[in-house]
Amino acid sequence: MINLKYFTLAVFIFCLISLISFGWSAENPRVPSSAVGITAAPKQVIPLNIAIKPFDIKVGDSTSIYLHGFVQCARLMPRNDSQYAKDAISGKTVSFSFDDKFVGGGTSAYDGSVCIDISKNYSRQLNLQAGIHTIKAHTTHEGHVIEGYGKLTVQKGTPIFELQDFIMPGYIGVDIAGGPVYASGQTFTVRAILWDVEFYDKYPITHVNVNCVSINEDTGSTKIIKTVQTNNQGGFEWSITLTPDLFSGCKIFCNFCDAHFAVSFENQNYNKSDREFLERVCPTGTQYSKNCTFPYNNCDSCCK
Image 1 (tube, one colour):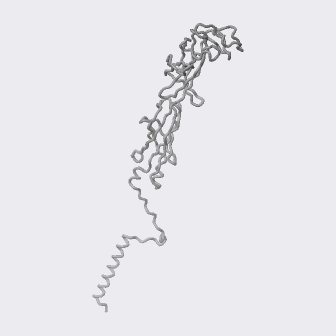
Image 2 (tube, rainbow, N blue to C red; image 1 turned 180 degrees about the vertical axis):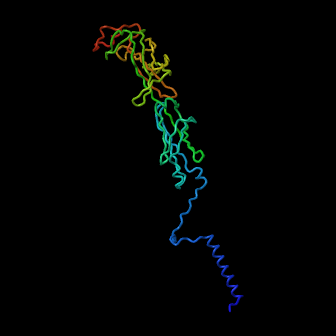
Image 3 (tube, rainbow, N blue to C red; image 1 turned 180 degrees about the horizontal axis):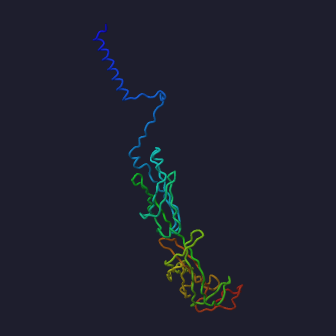
């Protein structure tokens, strides 16, 4: 005969054990036998600062020449080795500004690089003066602005003079090289164009002042005798009267004098450029001797 007391106790213990086992299983479900020994991949935790700003922008310093074309680049750099940061650098629209003026933009490549081409025509529109300028590149990520800064150095250009022609008076003789000899008091005109040259292209430098300079060969000194301005085509002309105060180097070459001149240009955006030319003259009070022929038999008698 079953003892009711012990039977009731046994049933109670069985129920208690079942209840405990059921609760444990609900909180900690069994792993299928087929998955035993496989470690679950840990969930990647992205730091807040990386989620907001997963990359930096590095802007390359650039050098250009006044009004010349150039390429400006930047690169998006992941802030850590997470795949999230690496994925974030590609396909971003990056805008570029020079001195806070928007100049263009592009889309970053898979490696985060992005460049814009400032063509020579666009550079002429921007008209960035010679000196140091601030470059800013910026983009956004999840609504947050990310930007970087660099430096653009614009160097001075080197202009050239193209002497087109001389409107000359009738000369009175020739020197040993066959060049013309003029008399004191005669006037001639120089015509020239001032160019900005970039490789095979050239552009007129318009509405700038060009100095017309006299060079004293005896002392090496110079003086500005006239200032003229270039026109819409970069051209200018200058009329010169051969007066004694412009003569030097007399009797160095036979008994001629030299009228030595130069056109000169320099400003805040261009390096100094000169173009010299020289005319032979007979000193005041003398005339060219027709007996002074090449080769000279008596060089000192060319101007009498």
